[in-house]
Length: 167
Image 1 (cartoon, one colour):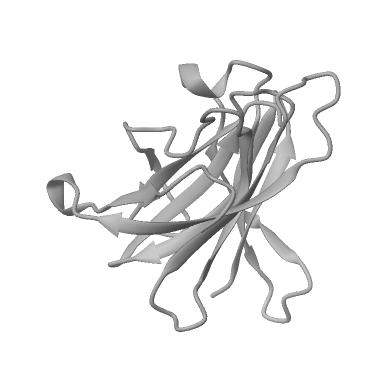
Image 2: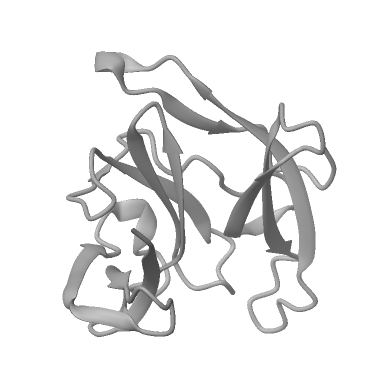
């Protein structure tokens, strides 16, 4: 089964999931579910924005990563939530955000993941900016390694080794 994770703008940017049709050309919106909204203190510093969903499956659990705040904000950052099902419910990680500003690398988020060429290293790709909210472009592209580490209650924690502008 293929699912699409996306944002709908309704009382802020909110993350949803829906099953795709078998031909992958449309959504079966009857199966659409609301998943995440910006409601934690760190997520609501500049607008009600939860966006950029990306899902990783690790040891039978689904890790829904997302970015919160407006992209112009120095505190635009990344968190995640975990579920036993791709359809949720997702429970936000208590240690969020897992990727946030550091030094002159601010506004970090809107990310995706891939693996290194040899398939052994998880890599997070994201953008950041200069910190000027009036002119926060051009944004810079960053790559950092990431990994799952042993967590509490059998739920591993996702860690991103950054931010910095190189691996």
